[in-house]
Image (cartoon, rainbow, N blue to C red; front, side, top):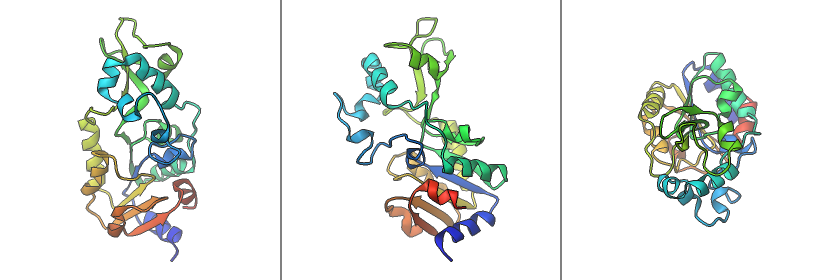
Length: 237
């Protein structure tokens, strides 16, 4: 049985699939990843991206944070790709129970997925640090300098910055979904970013599927390993 046929058989035989995805799911929508040779981390700025995306930098260099954030972290023209649409389709068929994503672009929801655990937040949610009022991404992008609420408070994107903890409720929901999964598909991620990558330990089944362009250390524990584009693979299911 070839790999695509085997993946198809695993999916058809399950009604409790969980998908865990990283930056590679969004690169095919034109959003650069963080760690490839053409990704965000390989570019040159006055400060390293890890510094500019930290909580302390947001506090101490707020205007510079937003200049970088608007320029490099928000991609409003991006559209869902074949992987996003296939996952939404599997959910609508009752097979996929949850998507766990490290991405902050909202493309899973745009494709139609409903149960999405956004580990690192979303650029589409923003809150005033003073009064807590919610603001859309348009407010961030249309303002200049530091975006402010009507109360005068600074508006902060609801994304998890370096030095900030992941949301406990989202982590719990994601871990419970993974615990109950029959088939666990991981795609487009290096599994290098913790604590998100640590969620893998909650999977108790024996049908782990890894879909990635590069080799992963976890392959020895996988039922099926497919090297390639997540969009191309999922479009063949």
